[in-house]
Length: 430
Ligand code: ADP
Ligand code: ASP
Ligand code: MG
Image 1 (cartoon, helix red, strand yellow):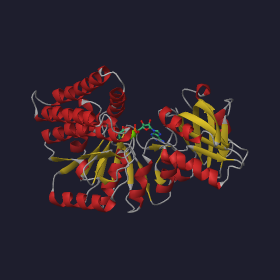
Image 2 (cartoon, rainbow, N blue to C red; image 1 turned 90 degrees about the horizontal axis):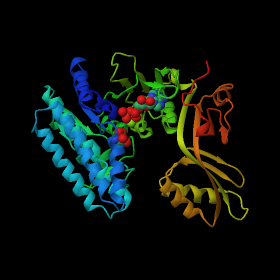
Image 3 (spheres, helix red, strand yellow; image 1 turned 45 degrees about the vertical axis):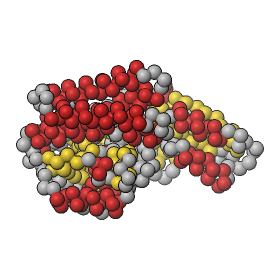
Image 4 (tube, helix red, strand yellow; image 1 turned 180 degrees about the vertical axis):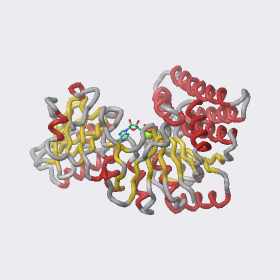
């Protein structure tokens, strides 16, 4: 069984990028068993905006946004294929399905409406990529992930039915010899209702395929040559880590290193399947490898930034302790509202949490806490997490920025700063 490959939005962002993907597979003599592909470029953000427009009162922006999505995808089809191609017809059909799904779910709860519409980005992109690979002579079978990845009905963060998903994937792989190409990010319940696995979840989809098909490896193709000790887009001297254990990769992604989705590692770890992070722009460059053994990246300092953080100081209203019962209640509410504590520190009468600044979810949480708890909020913060901080690193990185909150363990240090005091380009001390 050859490897599974995953291509993210940047690797198929336009017609030229899709051509490059085809060349990569044919020129470098790569023979993966299956490809998992994300939506083109920033399509998922565009679909979220479409949904927000649709749930608003004005019909105008929804139509405009749908047309823009249509134009973007048809322009790629027209560049790659002769006019009137089968790919064009497939895109038109999918856009009609998207519109019908939207209309059928307008009054449904947001997470259900989201999953019936936002997952179309991957259906559209894979239609183009599969048609292109067949066009250049790589026999490719477009597979609908809604028939393969079976999930529960936890919309926007669906849980996987591993047994049924493995059965379906193995049956398909036994029957079909061609390269399998499917969508990241989406699945469906056993009853066939579309679900999504969480933003950036295509990495996880690829790990599901690798796990269920007992693949010898998973390669995630990125616009960077591998996993770095900080985001190379924000730290001007970030360095690549060549080897990492699953455990360290989980820590870094959990803390927000955007390069790998945190749910990706567990399905690989359970079968000791190695993960390679490699560049589609520089396929010859040394990649990063993640596996069961410790590597050079396991002890080196690594920095992770999260912007748009909101700090909540939560205290019981009647001068009680923030004891286990209160903690259970507050954290239970956080989970119920789909919020994640990126920073969490507990004192006798206060719990400090930093969460992503999602206005609707935060408002719902605050409404539930009101009465029993006093809550102070501070917005506009950036969270810096340093793994293996060593002597003085955090201090050197902080410079003279005001520190809003901080905590430190043997392996991980975290500080929150006002975002407007942070540098635009960060620099790691030598
Ligand atoms: P995809 O196209 O697969 O969705 P992403 O954009 O999610 O790719 O991930 C690649 C980006 O992740 C890089 O362009 C880089 O700026 C960013 N990134 C953040 N942290 C890291 C890190 N520690 N190592 C490498 N890249 C990182
Ligand atoms: N397209 C989805 C997103 O942008 C999933 C992914 O790309 O991983 O979140
Ligand atoms: Mg991504």
